Amino acid sequence: MTRSTEFREQLIAAIPGLRAFGLSLTARGDRADDLVQETLMKAWKHYESFEPGSNMKAWLYTILRNEFYTQLRKRKREVEDADGFYSSRVAVHAEQDGHLDMADLRGALGLLPEDQREAIILVGASGFSYEEAAEICNVAVGTIKSRVNRARARLAVLMHIDGDEKFGPDAHSEAVLGGSHRG
Amino acid sequence: MVEDGNKTAKTAKPHNKTEKKIEKMNHAPNQPEVYDLIGQRLRNFYDEVAQQPVPDRFVELLNQLEAKSSQKKPQ
Image (tube, rainbow over all chains, first blue to last red; front, side):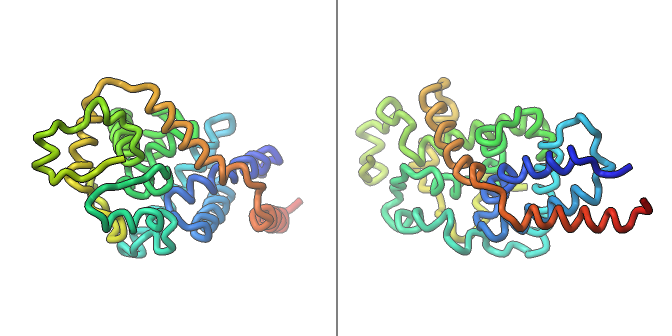
C-alpha cells in the first residue's frame, strides 16, 4: 500500500500548526522546525500505523511531542530557552521586588511548568478537545483539565487580568508582604 | 514528573505573593471574561506562526521522501 496523495496533502496542511506547537515547546524557531522535520519523516515512515479517517492531527502532534521529550531526555536537562524567546521579556522583571508586570502572553507562557504549557497550548490554542489532548500527552482527561485550569490561573495572575481588585490582599497582608506595588 | 516546579534555571522563581494569587484564582469561581481573554491571546500567539506559509524545506523534504519511496517500490 502506498502513501496516498491525500496523506501527503494532510501532512502539508498540518505543518503550520505543528510549527506553532513545536515552537511553544522548544521556544526556539530552529529547533521547532527541526522537530517538525523529524515528525514528518517519522510520519512518512510509519504511515501504515495511521488509520485512514482517524485523527491525523492528533497523531502528528503526538509524534512531535514524543520526539520533543526524547530529545530533551537525550540533552539531559540542557537549559531550554537559551535564546530568551520566553525569558527576555521576563528576566528583567524577575529581578525586581517580585512584582511580575507582564501583559505579554509569551513571557507568561514561558513561566508555566512544561506540562501546563503544553496542555494550555493544545486545548486553548491548537483546538484540541480535552480528550484529544489527554491522548496526545498520554495522561488521564482529569489530569489535562487540572493542568489547563492551573495554567489559566497562572496566566491570568501573571498577565494581571486576574480581577485582582476583587481578590486583592487586604491592608494587613499588604503590610506583611512588604507592600509591593501592583499594576 | 514534577507538576509545579520550574525546570529551567532561567525562569524566575514565583514570588510568594504571586503563588498566593494563583491559588486564589484556582479556587475562585469561574471567570469567563478572563478566560476568554486568555483564550484570545493564546490563539493570537499560536496563529502568528500557524498562519505563516509552509517553508520550502518541508515541501522539499516530502518530495525527497516521495521520490525515495517510488524508487524502492517496484512499479
